[in-house]
Image (cartoon, rainbow, N blue to C red; front, side):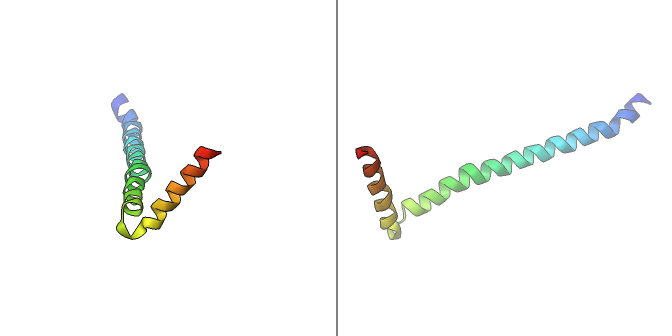
Length: 65
């Protein structure tokens, strides 16, 4: 009987654990992988030379300040 009494609690804990793992995985996907991919697309595309120039120019201003 004790196992039956705790089974719903065990099920809830398993579902909560899977939900938290899924939330963490999506968070990592968005913050790390997609950010890296977007930066590569923006900074290393031949059509966006002006963006690289802006970043390079701003870093020189920061270095001289």
